[in-house]
Amino acid sequence: MTESPCLNRILIAVDEDGRSDDAVRAGLGLARALGSTVELLHAVPVPPPLWPDVNPVQLATMNSEALTEAWNHLSERFHEHFQEFGFGGRPVEDLLRVMPGHAAQVVIDRANELDAALVVLGPHKKRRLLDFGSTARAVLAQVPGNVWVQPCEARPIRSILVPVDLSEHSLQALQRATKLARGLGASVRTLFVFTPPELGYSYGLTYPVAGPTYVLEEARDAAKKQYEETMAKQEWGDVEHAHDFREGDPVEQILEAQEGADLIAMGTHGRTGLARVVLGNVAYGVLRSADVPVLAMRHPEREWLT
Image 1 (cartoon, rainbow, N blue to C red):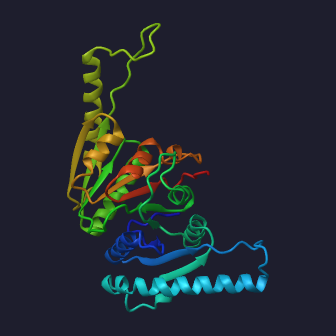
Image 2 (cartoon, rainbow, N blue to C red; image 1 turned 90 degrees about the horizontal axis):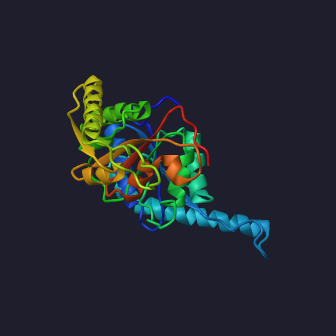
Image 3 (tube, one colour; image 1 turned 60 degrees about the horizontal axis):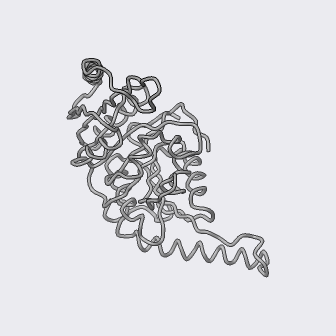
């Protein structure tokens, strides 16, 4: 897939209980600003075909009635949203789709069918387990494009925080975030977090022993110099930009740096079904705990497994 700098096809996953309303507003606002096509998608769980005492005709009727009821409810609920964001002149049938099935699989199938450049999800339920929401985890692993998680009230994107580790993937993500910033009229603030290395272990001890201070300082200075030189080589055009070098735990520093940002945009990586590895430890931690929207940008040539 060739990535569009303007996220030209946006798919927004919606629910019936209102938790996704901010995701709807964020996705519609993004589509309006970028001139993207947009579709709202809702999945309706349907009775399994092996339900006792339900014949195929009754099952088909139940499914049809459930889909129709959901579509009528959602089309009415989102009518004002369509009007507000300039989509009121389009038939609702072109903007809203209701399909039967499990939410994650419906979203994945439709995103692949559309070759959607972006899938927008509402807030996830924070859990104590490995994942941060089974639907979000599955969607992140299998959709062809990028994923936007909206945990808060939707607002205009004026400042984008882009964590980088200077890898090829993170620099590609930075380039795409810069193009997005240009389309939205936003600024970009990059963030590099230097993590002090564990320089060695003393024989017989199970905890790291700090090396000479000057070695750590040299490593920090070298990392900062490389970061500054790499950022100086980026093509910023007319996008206002700033850079932030910090030291410590990457997830903690990114979450601290989110203050003042309207969006965190970052690359992801991995090849297993475990959420921490599918996303990378840092992206996983940020997506799970961020208070602002997070745009997870997958590597265009990397295949994820589940």
